[in-house]
Image 1 (spheres, rainbow, N blue to C red):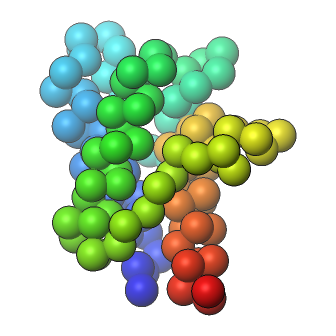
Image 2 (image 1 turned 90 degrees about the vertical axis):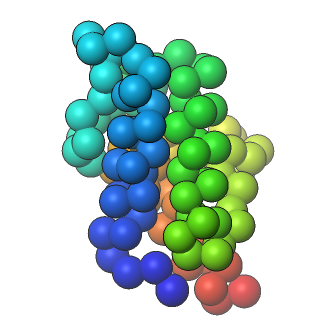
Length: 102
């Protein structure tokens, strides 16, 4: 089981990797309120996919948990789980909790 705060830590690691590829003006802050998509977001679709894939890889590497985050369920929600780093972490925690129960 992944402890509280660990999901954010993994996403922050993925953000660090993504930031290495971004120009300084487009780099993301490692904070829950950092926008990913929407009017305030700076990521394009390729960058978002890169962040998602890196996060999924870290979940597998660090915790041995395989999780597909970018699925129909995520994209069919009224409010995207990819709006901020915090909403992304919350969505991952939700999926992990369902997996633990199932």
